Image 1 (cartoon, helix red, strand yellow):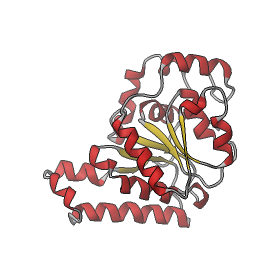
Image 2 (cartoon, helix red, strand yellow):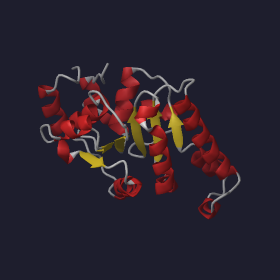
Image 3 (cartoon, helix red, strand yellow):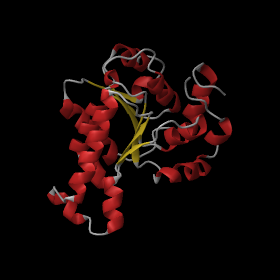
Image 4 (cartoon, one colour):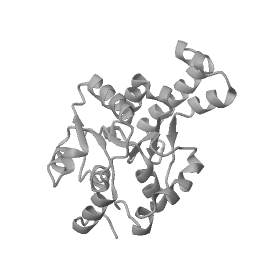
Length: 220
């Protein structure tokens, strides 16, 4: 099922922020991806791109909303996260020298968060507080996570698969969707860096009101 939105939550965004504290997140300080976990979702590409962009040094986390399971894609994701944590512990990179305290190091180690399954209200809260959404999927059906984001006016960095291109052509959604070629890793890196340098919320109440009135994909 697609994202369910409670209108009361939308009208009071500040109250929503409390629910993200259990993930130790700050509003507009993370990139979100909401997806199932399998190879076609291309999550390893996103993780590697995120790490190469080094936006974690600015305190921007990557939050993966999706249940890791016993498949190859999940194992690769776990390995990437584990390797990054180990590199922080071993002070592998010169830039890590700036992190002196245990709290700083622990926070850096947890730059990539996997939530597993979460309920719809928590998912809504994560959307409304995120800096942007990303979806590097190789193949998509309806592309519901991108559609949800566009309806909220949340900026999305997405792959150039057919469903994403189609969603971008609807209404004013092209204003909120940045389509990148999966063959250009540097384009993804640049997009992630650009988002952090223009740290503003990409949704607004007026857009939300208009979106809720015409879309069948968000349940009032």
